[in-house]
Amino acid sequence: MLQEIETKRVFPHPGNPREGVGDIGELTESIAAQGVLQNLTVVPASAASHLCPGLKDGDYVVVIGHRRLAAAKAAGLASVPCSVVEMGPKEQVGTMLAENLQREDLTVIEQARGFQMMIDLGGTVKGIAGQTGFSEKTVRRRIEIAKLPEGKVRKGMEAGATLFDFMALGQVKDPKTREKLLDDIGTNNFTWELERAVRAEEVERNQTRIEEMLKARGLSPLPQGVPSWKYKNAGAPVLVKDSTSDADVIIEEGALYYSSVNSRFCIYGDIEDRYKTEADTSAADAARADAAGRNAALGEICSRMHALRMEFARNVPKRELDRNKNEVFRAVLALCCAGMSPQDDEALGFFGIDGEDGCPKDEDGNLDIAALVESRQSGWVHGLFAIAYCAMEHKRYCWHYHYSYRGELAYIENPGRSPVAIYPFLETFGYQMSDEERMVVDGTHPLYTEGGGSGDGV
Image (cartoon, rainbow, N blue to C red; front, side):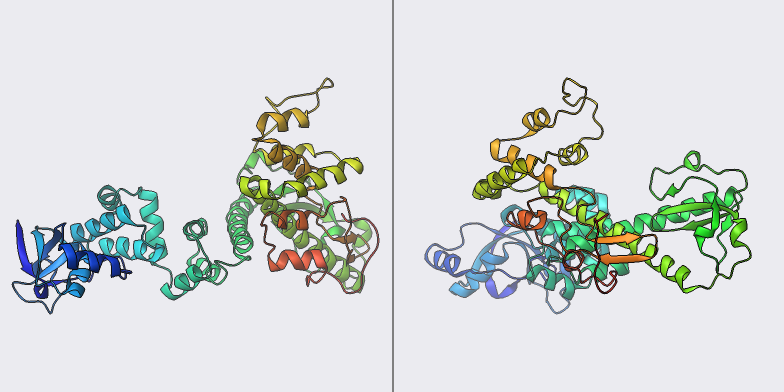
């Protein structure tokens, strides 16, 4: 029903997901000159009494037109044209969400608050998706954001966090870990810490599953007090990953124990005969075990570093490539002069190819990197960038330390597998190193021993 209603009897909806009406200066001038040209959609105050307990009969609450109402009041209009409709609480909130999204994107917080309000009013994810036009997955993700501390979410947005950053938090299952990640969202450490958290959850989930599998095969945890290297090996290491199945667990005759060491399980038999009478408390054993543990931990960190570099390189914006094409050319020239060519596995990873089937091959049946790059690149700058990156990249390239089985673990300054330093190269295109990456590269990471070392990085 369309009618003129006094502005003093029309009120903003307290359940409006949008926190403010923004700048209404121009709109106020327009309404002062021409009046309100588009009707407001309102409901009687009784229909929103759950949120507006102080309103009286004859008052109305805006569902669509909050900016017009604010501008009309600022312009001094005595009344505004309104379409009075009947809507339940859930429909009111859903309509406000949909209307705001059609005109201007709501903030992450506003979307999350609106969806959570609809849930609190008895709505369902499916119903909200149907009413607002969002996918059910998006609705669930926004509701998860609504569960986070609003202060931390606001701080992250002020630091530059994007909607995709908040969506990425959904990869982490543990609520406490998600909340902790909010301290880094919007900073150069967020992607690093997120990757670490996701991997930790994957490892923990798979580790529990595989440990139960080993126990079912009759193995027990390795006894404490004796270094594992004094036991006989009795099976191939079992990698902790999603695809590991019972068929992958190879246990030899005489196997008794298992131990978990940095994303894999090792299978052992009895202690070697020559060690059964030795004292097991030597300082050398302790140093060896400590260095091996730190070596494995650094290996896991370097694996994450590689994954982040690869993800960034695969998604460098075209504008950055065009803007820095001279840097790309200089890198390719330096690599060519050094006789370095792209690594097969890095090229496959760069282009997201799982295995060499269907890839171009040379006359000897080997992967033809040049033909692969030519078939997949979009423009010569991107092609040269792919060649340069895949030539200097290596999963173990940034392991800036030396480890020996004598129990040594020491930092090496710039092991130098490439004439082009990979991090400065990627930073040219916008890559941001996390604090932990910098500590690994510059030798300040606490996992390194003091002093230094010599030899080749492993």
